[in-house]
Length: 485
Image (cartoon, rainbow, N blue to C red):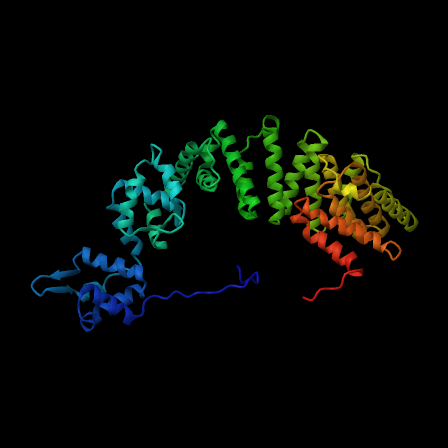
């Protein structure tokens, strides 16, 4: 998939031991001359392809079943080549491992089952949490035996991990297929109960990923389903904050599926927050149709315009991503009108020139001190500026240049009159990008420079591409030399 996406990759081929090296290893292990071991090595190599893990398991299996044994009369190791040659070890390595695991103590088997549920490795912290519960109190006692048996190792980062994928698969096979979902669910529920009220930032994914296997049991418990929905929402939010959008989308959709039918009536705040997060993750993972369905449901169920505004803004972004710029314009126009903003039917060049002059004068009257004023806490202003940003861009493609000037100017006028916020810099840069002319170029350049300096006051990381495009692409080139690549 990475190569299909044109992502540069480096392939490392990890081949097994060649026959010569394998013969050296076997002769050292059996304390025999290499020539004597050559026939055995040929069989072992044929069966294992030189895979070190398979070699070890094969040799131990031969020894445990008497096919490779020490002859006290000859004072050396002996073997039956014909019988060994008939062994199908490569195909039966999982059976061999499973048989070996079935002979382990209950504590070790429980530990291996638990680890297998989490994949190829698990952090020692999780083992510690589970060992403090009644249900899994013995797994810490199984660690030493599992380490000595060569099934797992501990790395420098504090993770216990299986020594090979086949060990992981064999450990997972200790849980019957019909019981796996219930085992996962029980494991997650125990960890969920133990961590309730604690900081679970490090384990929230591990809890959610396990407990989600038991959806059929969760849905039978009305009290539990809300708690698990909130758990998945937290996991999804954590993934979104870490830019892992696909993982976030998975957890958030799981959370949404757990809400009862009357969730908008009885769990309004949760429904509002979760719905918006689902739509955000759907939008960022290109599930645009899903995002639109969820956003329209929020808009339908929201109790006031303030609760609807974030969804209208995200809806405009989703429509923009689909190239539906006329829909973006219509959506923003309708909401801006509802917010009391004036949307003209048409706008000519003369009117555009006038509104530019008005805006520049307002900026001059406000003075440079306006840029140093305290940031506003007006949520409606923030939302309105985002709507103006969207409609300004849409107008560039589906309306006239004069309309673009109008919307860009009105956004700046709004911020000048009602306060400065994190959306003010882009509003200023959008305005200067469309307003700049030879007779006002220096003033527009100064405004643009001031707008860019606001990066020091606000977290504008997500806006950087648009800020730089408007500043360097539309304004700064008149005054600053192009830098060499």
